[in-house]
Amino acid sequence: MVKNIATARNDFPILAQKINDQPLTYLDNAATTQKPQAVIDALVHYYEFDNANIHRGVYTLAERATEQYEGVRQQVAKFIHAESDEVIFTRGTTTSLNWVALGFGAQVLQPGDEIVITVMEHHSNLVPWQQVAQKTGAKLRYVEITADGELDLAQYGELLNAKTKIVAFTHVSNVLGTINPVKKMTEMAHAVGAYVVIDGAQAAGHFPIDMVSLDCDFYAFSGHKIYGPTGIGILYGKRELLTEMQPVEFGGEMINLVTRQKTDFKAAPEKFEAGTMPIAQVIGLGAAIDYIQSIGWSAIEAQERKVTAAAYQLLKDIPGVEIYGPQIGSSRSALVTFNLNGVHPHDVATVLDTQGVAVRAGHHCAQPLMETLGVSSTTRASFGLYNNLTDVKRLAAAVRAAKEFFQV
Amino acid sequence: MSLGNLSDLYRQLILDHAQHPHHRGELANANQTISLNNPTCGDVVNLSVEINDDQIKDIAFSGDGCSISQASASMMTDLVKGQSTAQAKKEIATFLEMLMGNPDEKDVDDLGDAAILATVVKFPARIKCATLAWKALEQAIGEAEKK
Image (cartoon, rainbow over all chains, first blue to last red; front, side, top):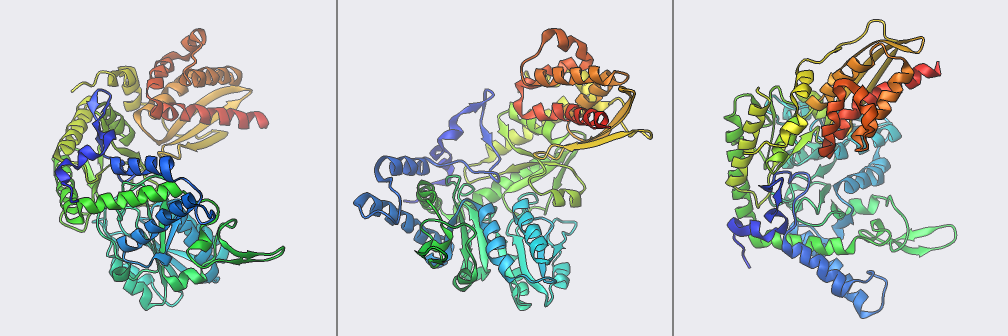
């Protein structure tokens, strides 16, 4: 059934409430999205009718749970244009990236090898590589940004060399909103024989992602940023690389045969999924993907483009507001990060909260980027498929109220 | 648009301290310097203190933060400059208790301008902003006592 995006807001029960006597204007979707009733219902239905541990039971209920769990793996594979044995369930993007860094990076890196990341990485695609670099003696090198908030592709090209073993970058910046030219960057990295890891946390819920077309080696994203439950994430890896990659966690279900001194692991993806996985959350993720597809990418992209452009313009019209990241019309995703001169982002966010407007203020887990931008923190409004022009007008009115209140 | 409870948080006295903080800078003759940051938001307070004979002879702060953290640091330096370290420790304890919502009314009166920060309790997300400088001073005194 195709749903209409104009009424999609009604599918999210949380959005109907008031916060501080004002209608909730939820603009922190880059942190986590709200959940449609269909996802909530899928979780409740699973616990009411289908709950059992997967892969182990020989009884009907366990088979039903297993079938649903594996069904979502196939669904995710289709969603990202991959094969189902290339889809690993994890706890979230952070876990996915840690597993690649520790289970693959630490295997292939030698002292003197180079890891290339970018200065716009979220800490989750930065700290694991620092750790692996320290462990293996590899060198960590950074792609810088241009004045427009885009990656400096010329400098990226200069960084790549025969020693570059791993290149890891974000698909979309969680601060600048920049959509990076990941296909081109992947080609450039492959040309020097490097493996490519992409952080897709800020991409997956906003536009289609296609593993065949991107040709990256690993890709990570989270369920809770694409209208699904928390506690479930995805790691995609090319089949032959998942064979090489080692599990980071060990225990039940990931083994083929255990003897007193030695264990033989299962093949991917099972060898990575030790212990009881978040089964309900996997099933909830399946419902979230169904929901996204019932709205359709073209409607989601058009709505978010419209809302982002309006927010950019309305904020830009307020004297004293400085906006970070590429201009509208450039390759830019559904968020606007800004500062109001003379008012600390925390103070801005508190004023906005009194108006029911929920935004993020702080360093957005991207401290090296903040340092590059020359600020200690910023305010970020980020959008989802249910946001509309009314939300954006409330945002701008609340920023004007903050300006008036602090008399700047 | 109602901004009613905002003026609870941002009383004029708080805004005055935030806009024109007292004892801002660094001491040339400090014997204790402590930098504390709030890892969730990136606020930083650098405290430099001159402690001699169990007395806070001089104190200054620098760093970057919201109006609550700046005002709180300013008010704290006003209060503790010249105090004995024992007295300052008592004020810190009183302040931190107040920010946890358990004010001792009698002691709170001793906090000077800082007593006004009791209103921050109504904004739980901002409590850490208010306590940052005080925790830095607690550490600075602790280090001085080790010597």
